Length: 395
Image (cartoon, rainbow, N blue to C red):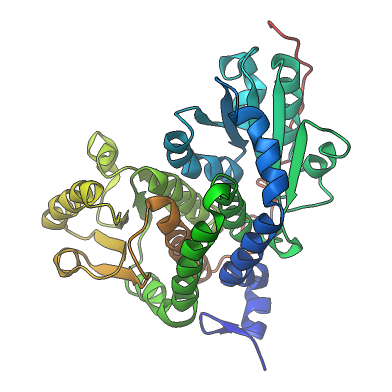
């Protein structure tokens, strides 16, 4: 039987050079199940490794990566920060490499959690090297989609390193990271829920069911948005963890349209403070709605404000469940059918699928080739052209 994804058959995927991107978006719920199983099997080893740092009185946990891999950390850090006594930070490897001692403590025990699809980007290696130069008590947790990459290999025969090598299919071959992002995000979420892992996985299974339902039965709303509104700009807005999801959502659209759609992200409260100037008659604003009643008040207030100011611009609300009040205020509503109410850190898994789907469909509508939207090579799947320079402590 011929495979179709979003009503696009294999021949059309091949012709439009979208096979990898569409397949990698669609495979996410299945790969999430495998990642849950993988972390469950590593539970005791992971707990012992992480406890070497978290059992100490004071410590830093630093989430790091470049591009989408950085946004994994940006999505996770506010949730983990609260959970781990406000000791979690998220920095780009690009920041660590350029000015390491602005971010890294020489003396505090530090767990550096490095994210990498390939594990081979220059800054991934550079960040590890400068951290080892600066930090006196450093541990590495590598979360990567490539068991043969440089990140993974750094963990060999090293008691201060632990590598989580996700399943091979999460090593996305498309230019844009989709299942790589969500599986690195999921693995790390589970790593810090090891004491209640069965309950955490049970929650994730509900997220998986809703995500699969969207991919099979609800994707038409993404098609409707792209087909009915030729937006030239898009803004994604979300609170706490959903700010990180908004950042990744904006990058997916920027990448897959080769920069031709202008993108922005912010929080619903932050958007009023200048960034709202971006809204014109060709702007689509996507607002991610929290289940948390307190946060939702601010999100709904912004929707009410923007709803009354609409001219040619349009608004999408993305939420868990139904809300007639919100539905009446927006142009499009995406309602995930998740069994229960959840923290934004979990809602983000389903919400990012919507953003990825809209981005690939917009890319195709614009005549782009999603698997490699920049075939002339100015931007590459794995960054090229970076020179790493040696660093000495105190420079």
